[in-house]
Image (tube, rainbow, N blue to C red; front, side):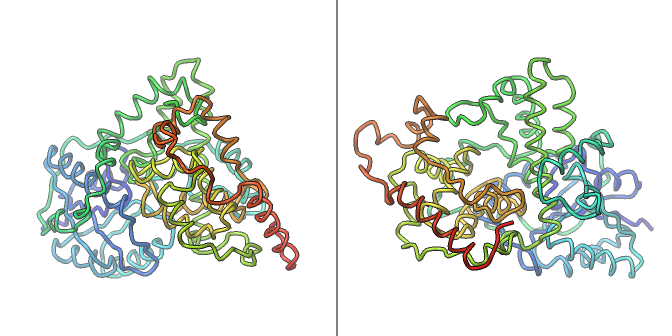
Length: 456
């Protein structure tokens, strides 16, 4: 009697360089490839709307890729602690393989690993979505790094240890009951707000590799202009990484492989950004409450303002009267993405000019970004707020007017997203005075320090 292998996919929706899938095929039995939509288990954060949109099309693409090599994708929904053992029982599986997670969900995985092994089922987990396991990159004292530069230096000293795995060319599938993807309701209906997402995004593993190649061959040479939102100079790979349609190891080897000599410096700069992602996941691993609590407890005493809801809504809707901020928030709502420099500016405006708790902004980005993940989204918001690991000091307040002059000097980006500027229909004044609100933010920071707390 055969004993199929269950491959439980999470944020690793790809065939190539997928260690769990690779090991399952190597085991030699039939394979049950499962994606479980779990939004109810303890510690699981329900997905945002834009992420659900991407997930729908990513799963659809993965199902087609599996079908092309003889496999199939099984969709289930519910509590992992109940659903995974149920699938094992239905299929008489002898093994369950998965790729590791690093937030609170790892407690679910640990519990399942123990209970399944007690039931006589082989269980293995693999590193697939990080270059370095968080527990392997430590200080001399054995603790986690709180500063990025020494963290990344240590990563580079450790070195990347393996080559990416090839995708299987065939797979012996094992039949199992599956939900219909459309029944999950991941796509918007009324109103359909996803038109801009459909225009600007192409989910799926094949599209991820096309994007990587285009970046390497055509865009990387411009990467030193990456802070200019009106110039095509960034990779656009973050949503593909978020869903694991592409692995960081694949990106690493592409950026250290056949790159034109003139682009080597840019490639190293780009890999440093990949390192920042690794740092954020290390932070999450050691501080799983990252989206809920200040990494630096001193900020628990920060005196956030009682900001009127209409001001927060004006920020969300791109109606603040500050052109660069409004351009960024409109880009976000339309495309599900935002240029990284502008993300910092819009976050700074909410936190420091409106004195709104960073968690409010993080929750909005969680719902509207197609690349929102449990490490980067809260870690980057805390970085701007000054409350996070290796954070920008709170008194660093991005001036959105000066940022626009420096990084969008010809107004290409702003004119695209705020066209009414040309028709002089734009609000004559911002909703807050930038200079006064900056002074208020610095005073709030001094109040926090006076309370006996320290930001260090």
